[in-house]
Length: 522
Image (cartoon, rainbow, N blue to C red; front, top):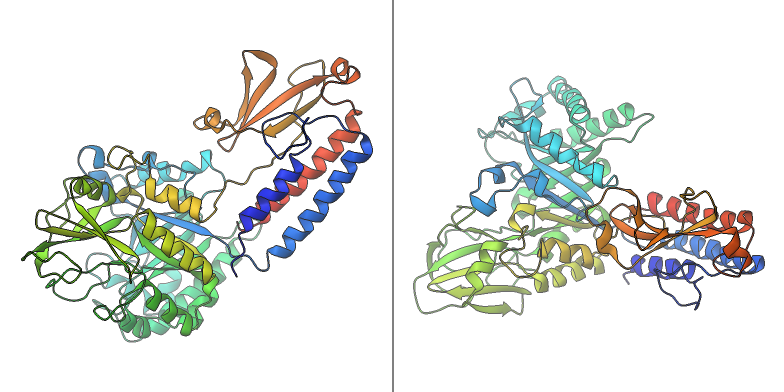
């Protein structure tokens, strides 16, 4: 049974926030004064609840939302152009920059003219969200042989490893992603399967040694959904020991020449698709030794299109090849979600029941894609099987401007975030510095009016209508802090306890919650 950890967290937060005047489970009101005994009683209850949550950690699954940014999206036209500054730093738990390459000196390097600027802008997103983790993904160059050359000896692997440490640290990345979706293509050697395991092991050992006294560099891999290539390309039990997470590219399944329509990322197989489904591939990785909690289910924010050749419009309908290029992405067959939204105006949308995915038909063109409903089915599937989360390809294919789908900015990624119960980690009750010389105590509580701090830096903002009540912005969430004076305390308003009792109780609660939120992988 899947444990919804965030529901438990909200319950405990509600307990802590229920010290308001009406003793309701609501945020946004000041805490009512209580006798000292009651405050300490509540604090003890909170401590017990905290310990219960610690026990829950053993049965809950970490939910990662790992989102890819593609550097070539900067070259799209008009509103399709996408840069690191367009990324919302609060949507995903991890951001992955695609891609760096391996040069002839067996070192990681960039291959775009403005890469250093993009790296800086990408990692500056952590200034807004300090909990965000950024990784740099590395893959073969266009010739497809240099990665294999780097794997070929211990000396060349060590050159690569040393270069990744200096490169990642210099540009502010938190880790490395090994993009290996075609492990047996190009100039690959039959020995690369073993050598890739050795590289993973040596990378982790070096990252651990280098990370003494500071956070260790993360290590992940993006891997294929082709079951034939899986067996030839990976020692799954071995690499699973060393990788922090494994992103399985369970999309863009290929059934051969385009002679009929099919969905590129069905949740389940049917008679036409055989082993090309999310479920089949994820179970394939599990049965060959990958821990479920390390596997991320790959989701796409794009669809694949076909040009029909008959009046038939269902799955498997005759087609002569890919549909036309999208107006912004300019790729044959591949349409971004926002381009699909344009296509859906006047299109016939249908649902493939056995595969839990939609497709649409209009004017002789057919496109299979994902939407919020198919994401619901896939996230429900990964929760039931305790997978580690989602790897999304890509941010720039979602409706990031909100101009096309009528569902707000980033409708797909935002929906994923809600489905995965991913929330920013922040303290709920804190004692703040005194903004007013006559304050005996300040109380800060979470406030329902989140929009105030959505685009503001962390800090205090006075409310003009009440100089002793101000907003506190922390990690883009809004809190209300109210100044309580000694006169208010004596008159029964605000907090009447001595500063020490309430403050210590609040500090205890805040410290526990902060420790829990920071320590917890959720």
